[in-house]
Length: 331
Image (cartoon, rainbow, N blue to C red; front, side, top):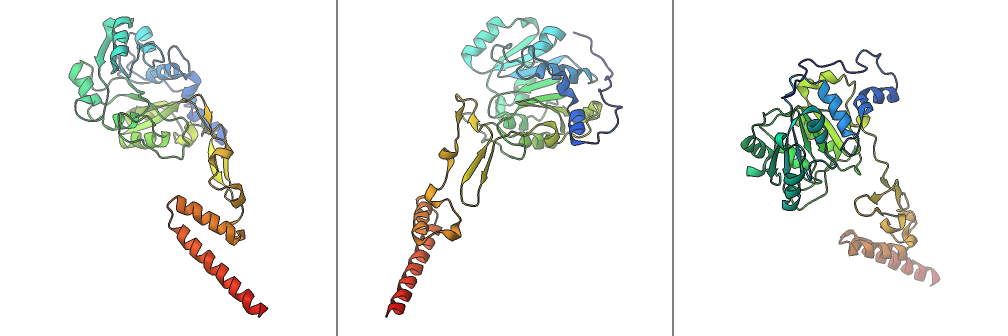
């Protein structure tokens, strides 16, 4: 078993003067990302995790990752096992991928392999899988949650385990202001917004300490002060995505940013594809002619909006009234 420090090191910037600008506050709050480095991770997680762990007291040398794949590619834990002699629990549910993991993982003497899908009820809960099948302590140094979908529900269901650090994937296309959690469904792959995970973390007694392109890193509240982060609000810890949708007064739908599906050959939304109204109706509603109002009402009806009938009735009444006035004037 490797020897771990019992006392935390001082966080860089801990004695620095208080930041006086937004840029300075962001820089001090995100100081952990200065240590971003990839060994087998994708977006600097290996380096950030290593630095965060170096500040924690009482480390026990255990980490967990799932779905593990082959245990090396895109792994957030392999560097700890390979370089710091950690014990690791690797969970993989897909039979073929588990067979490759069992056959090819380099450090089998410190790897505890479990073939299972992780869920949020019964024996598939992380608590049941880890505490029932391994000798891992209830407070491992790190748990990495990355299942491309139900990450929120898996973490939410963790009750008995109390990891020091939790790394969890979010949907990187979602704005910081979006509060979205996908349905708890094993067949669903939508992901959850970063703000929903920050909210869940606080409910479970965890604080955000770093953000990468696709992952949030949390620590148990007991250790949060060791990181000397002046402000860990999501708005400061993560730059918002540039994709936005807005609506003009004339009904035009306006897109800004890339607005593409990064996991599906970058299929992209275009202004033409997202318009709700035909070009002939893209002007102020009060300027519509009776004909335009009838067209708009038909669109509402097509979308099962009962206001369409009201608009048609009012347009007909207005048209009939105007015709009666014109006849009375001509007579």
